[in-house]
Image 1 (cartoon, rainbow, N blue to C red):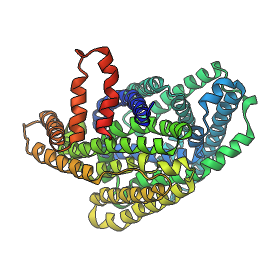
Image 2: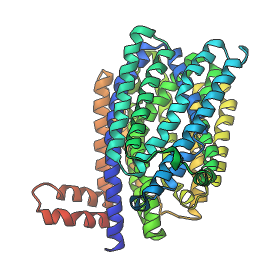
Image 3: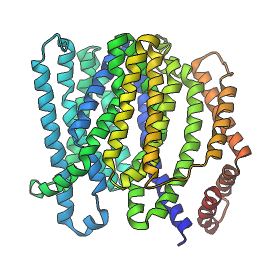
Image 4: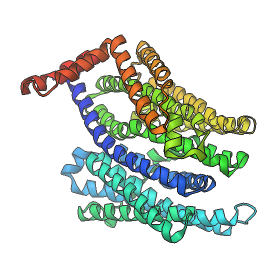
Amino acid sequence: MTPSEAVGIELKKLVRQSGHYLAGLVGALALGFVSFPIFTRVFSVADYGMIDYVQKVVLLLTAGAKLGLQQSAMRFYDGRGFSSDRIAARRYYSTMFYSVGLAALAVTAVFITVLSLAPHWLVEAPLASLLCFAGTLVFVRALESILWVFLRVEERTKMYSIANVAMKAGTIAAVCLLLAFGGRSPRTYFAGAIAVEGATVALLTIWLLRRGLIDRAGFNWSLTQKSLAFGAPLVAYELAGVVLDSGDRFLVRHYLGAQPLGLYSVAYGLSSYVNDVLIAPLNLALVPLYMRLWKNEGPARTREFLSAGLDLFLMVAVGVLAAACALSRDGILLLASSKYRGAEALMPMVVAGLLLYASNSFFSSGLWIHNQTMTMAKLLIWSAATNVGLNVLLLPRMGLQAAALATLISYALCTVLLCRASFRTLPLRVDGKAIAKYSLAAGASWAVASRIELGTPLMNLLARGATVMLVYGGLLCAIDKRVRAFAAGLVARLPQRSEAAQMAAPAIERQKLFP
């Protein structure tokens, strides 16, 4: 097998597994598009902002409670070895599960105790009560994270996606059911989330117990120490990532109040939906694949695989940004209602920032492979500090636009810093001419689509979305020979071709697309 064919096989696996994750994400996104208009209309703007605010507090605490062990679980999984050594497998699963569970239980207990004793001048009584109630999710989501990792490392991509969609659907159903009994309050929302996510954790834990993979006797302190040594720097990394992503919510509430927080939460939430469709399935599949490729095939093959994947990612990401710019106004009106008018102005900058940050799945690969987690943590802390500093400086002067601008600048800084550090150990090929072509085509597609006005938000969304896709794809085919070759390959794979020709085509097409 030639190197090009081997890389092609790995790319095909990446696409297939990303497809499974994407199917789950599409299902979850579809549910989100159902729940998003319901929740934005049921809850007031201030209550919706409060739900998002508490979610970010829970996210920050969960990041600390995991102690970076979910990343260690990715790093120390040995599928080939565990398949032949049942004791080693039990030691791995038991140690990771109980280490995360005990740490999360301790963090949750301390958080609730501190809030219960905190004076009212420090934390208002209603907020403290809601945080204590929602704090249960810290324990639940920490365990949830390690259970999801187990599914990822075993490459059970279909099961992962089905479980995530079922949990999302169950949460929406539970919240809607509880609204009739608990009233329209943030507490009702978190009651539904706790019930369904807790049940999901219980079911996945029972599944592992029945497979004989979790046993108290299997807990190994030596493996815990080794995992903490790898994961501890990632606690700072993950906490900095949460501050980078969510710190602006606390500052928006402090400087501008609950109503602007609701507007910003809707804009950021809708931008995250757009970003997740592209990024989450890719990110979930990418790390296990390139880690395995590094171990089994070496640096050259890994570099070629990541460079090819990066180029595909950038092609799609630039098109997604063009669509977000063209659709933001009508998306806000249709999905959130007119009471959130004004949030659409924030979306292009937020989407651009999120897509830049998502590219770090590729740009930081060298740091992951070489265990330079402390370097990653330091660079992310600098980026998070930049985000906080810009918000403190600009929010009182610019209003909500400052939060979106700070997000874009800080994410761009983070990408540049991680890219510089990672390329010292694993430099990837970045095609500047291709990026320029993607940008030119995206700008033209946005300019054409933004002129379409059909009277209603739904019709505008459909027409503008279709226009962006057609114009962007058509221009890329016209100006980029690799895209033409890929499109020709897709046409050539129509059903009338022979089975032998279908088997031979993928390698040829990949050579044309990634020479």
